[in-house]
Image 1 (cartoon, helix red, strand yellow):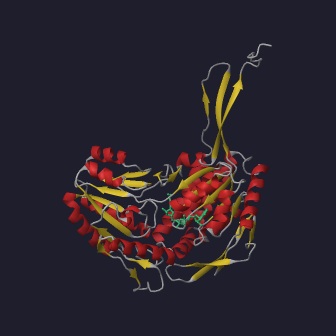
Image 2: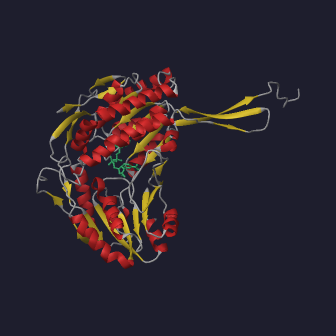
Length: 490
Ligand code: NAD
C-alpha cells in the first residue's frame, strides 16, 4: 500500500495532524493508499513557500526557453512511466486502461504544447499618437492555487499545472480527496526534472479545508478550479476577499442533437460514446440526446440494443469498455437520480441497477441507463447526474431542438448530427455552449479553448486562452521625446 505525502517547499511530509484517509480502488474496494489529510496550517505553509519562491524569481526569473526545457523533460518522463501511470490511474479512479492511456498520453502532449507555446511571440505594440510608443507584455500572476476533481485525476491536473508553470507562476495544487495517486507521481516527476524548491507544492485533503484555504488566501493571486457548479460558486465567493483572478471549469448537462438526415449508425455510435465513455463521469458528457421525431423510436431501439452490449467491469481487465463508478458516494448519487427519474414518470428503457455479478461484486458498477418519455422540467433532464445515465428527448423542428438544447442552466458542451452542413452549422451556432461538435462527440485538443457558457464556468482552459488565465497583461508607454509635458503653465 502506498503511503502518500504532502509536497511542500521541496519536502515530502505528513500533514500536521498526522491524519490520513484511505484511498480505495473502486473496482474492488481494496485500500490502495493512505493519503494525508492536509490542514489549514499545511495549506498556509504551502502558500508561503510558493509566495517566497515566486518573489525570489527562481522560476519567474528564468527565460521562457529555460522553463520550456523543464516542461519538455516532464513530458518525456510521463512517456517513460506511461504504463505505471495507466495502472495507477485505473486503480485509483476505476476507469478503463484505454481511457487512462489516453489521459496519460494527452498529459504529456499538454506539457509539450505549453513548452512550445511559451517561447512563441507574445505581447503587442500599438500605433498610438506620437511621441509615445505603446507596448503590451505578459507577466506571471504570482501564486496560482489549482483545485481539481476526481474524474480525470492526471489530465485535469496537467491542464492547470502546465500553463501555470509555463507562464512563470508558482503553484499550490490540491487533488481531489479520493484520487491523489497519479498526482503524487506527477510531483515526483517534477522533482526529478529539477523544478526548484517551493515552485510546485501539493496539499491533499478536504475541499472545505484545503480548497477553501487556497480560495480565501490573500497570498494566492489566481485560483483555477475544476469541479461542480455548487463548489465553484463557493470558490468564487471566497476569492472575492483579495479580488484574485479566477477561472472556473464547472458542470454540464450537454445536448446531443440528432436530425433525421444524420448518418444513422454514426449518430448512434457517438450517442453511446458521448454518454457512456468514462461511465458518464465526464463534465462534457452528452447526457441529453435530442432526437428528431421521425427517427425517434428507431434511434431509441438501436441505442438500447447497442448499450446493452457494453462490457462493464474492472478497468484493468481486457475487453472491458466501461469501468467502475469512482466511489460509493457517487454510486449512491447516481442510483438516487435513477430513482428520481422513475418517480418523475420517465420511462426506464434500459438499465437502472447496480451490477454485482461477473467479478463486480466488490466494486461500484452501474448498468448503462437510458430514460425516455422525459419532459424539460424533470430533475433528470435539468441536473448533472455524472454517471452512465442518459435522457432521450424528442423534437419536431429545428427551432424546437435549439430551444430544448438551451433549456438548462449549464452551457458546457453540445453536438449536432446532420448531413446537411448548412443546417448543422446554423444550429450549432445557436447552441449556448463553449465546446461544440458537428457529427462527432468528445474530441478535444490542447490547441483549442475548453470551457463553458452560463453556469458551466468562467474562463477557458487549454490553448492560448488557458495560458492567459495565468498571465497578467501590462501596458508600457514609452515617451520617445523626453521633454516636459507643459500641461500646467506655471
Ligand atoms: P467537486 O466540486 O465536489 O470537487 C472539486 C474539487 O473541489 C475537489 O478537489 C474538492 O476537494 C474541492 N472542494 C470541495 N469543497 C471546496 C471548497 N469549499 N473550496 C474549494 N475547493 C473545494 O467536484 P467533483 O465531484 O470532484 O467532480 C465532479 C464535478 O466536476 C462535476 O460537476 C463535473 O462536471 C466537474 N468537472 C468539470 C470539468 C470542466 O472542464 N468543466 C472537468 C471535469 C469535471
